[in-house]
Length: 188
Image (cartoon, rainbow, N blue to C red; front, side, top):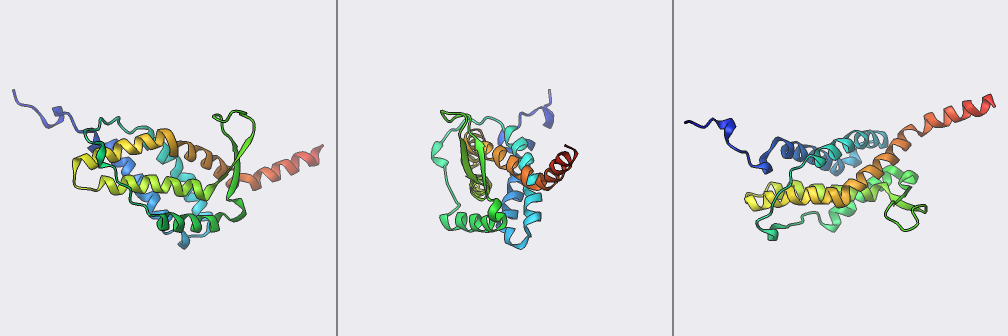
């Protein structure tokens, strides 16, 4: 009996899900590397739209069993990180800092201060390392890239995405809220 191409189990590291995550991660990184060429509003709107895509695509990544954990490589240098951070910090200006309640803190009620620029740059670092490691010609590097991208989503950049996206939503919509609040106060 002849096997059809569709009957062959596909390697999960080359799946459509992984390739879509790779595409979104690459777009995110390329945009942040050129963020100085865009005005603040364009940066905010780009991040508003791509953050949910990153979250969805990363949450769909397959679980990968590693054969060689020595394939770990990191590519983003401290200088590159600082360059992206400084650009974003300047774009966000006084709106860079925001506060959130961390459910893992003991008090559960004390607000924690965070930086949009730092969060988005940390996400950049994780995703850029994923993109570059995935491009290595060794299968073990590709497997590790997918494994690490999924692991870091679950333990690090997934949390940053959610918190920073919430702060972005506020920044992009706070003017409307002020108007509604003002209208409400006028009626009282």
